[in-house]
Length: 334
Length: 78
Image (cartoon, rainbow over all chains, first blue to last red; front, side, top):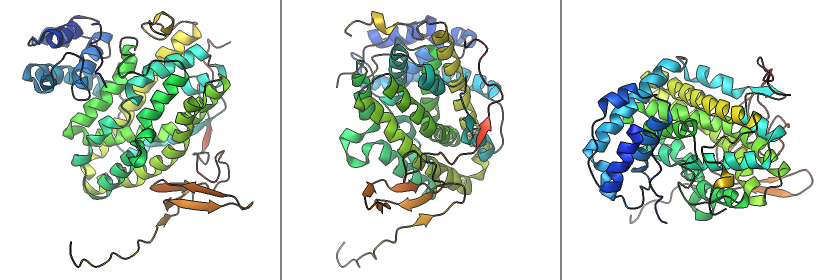
């Protein structure tokens, strides 16, 4: 596998990061630019995304050692603090983990006009499904990777259950059933490119933020409770959402691999939801009860950022416009 | 390890929840009423008890409580 190319910068912060990586140079501290940046905006989110990517697969032409470049790490820390402070301000506070998860366990009767999966199931056109698949590939081509970082921070029940779920995500010992691989098959069925990181330039800030949240929570031991809450929110909402997306793909005439990805998630995540709530959250709370507000924060931050992404997608699609920064129709090599 | 005693055969655990699926340690085979056998090889298998699942006998979260949406449709939807 070749690492992806560095993306096109979207402002001063991302320009400085990309330049430093491209030229093998050190990065300036950029304190003022960080203070003034929109914490959810394209520039900060892309800069953060690129810095996090050094911990996954890196970029073509960038030395592996840059992952531990202290200048880049210091900048990453400053950007993370800006992002985290914004989330702490904007995410509605919930004390209890169950209290935070409860609204996600209710299914709306009929059509939910604010839900992307409801929209795609009922009204989604083929090009909208392709756009959705392209921007979700930022996460699904590294599905479950950021969550693996929490494993050494857990103990006992929570650890055993988390590892069991991750084992399932990673194909239960079969490389052709790794969920990231199933997603690449889905993309191929839709006529999309499957190379890792391919749609980074096309993805809006709202999509980058959902992935940056996982990397942030996964990399920080201090945020282990929030990572578990985030993971629970994903697993709890995945099964019914996947059912709607599988139906949308069937209706749009996508191939069997495209449907299989979501069919698998309907069944798998109905199980994962039970295990993450009972054993991972239950086990972590038994071990470290003080983490309960953090677990709730992880749930809330996930819902908050997913809602922002949903609003961006539905806003564009209802106007008949592309939700991507670079529409797929002008992508070369399609 | 030499002379280790053979571990006793592990007893599969089933977890019961009145409001959710039956959780069974996998792998599991289920013989349906018509005699057909379905298999799940997951580490845990969630078996539908509400009978609303569209992928019966497996759970698809159809047991969840359903609520009327307060917001309903967006105003700009035709």
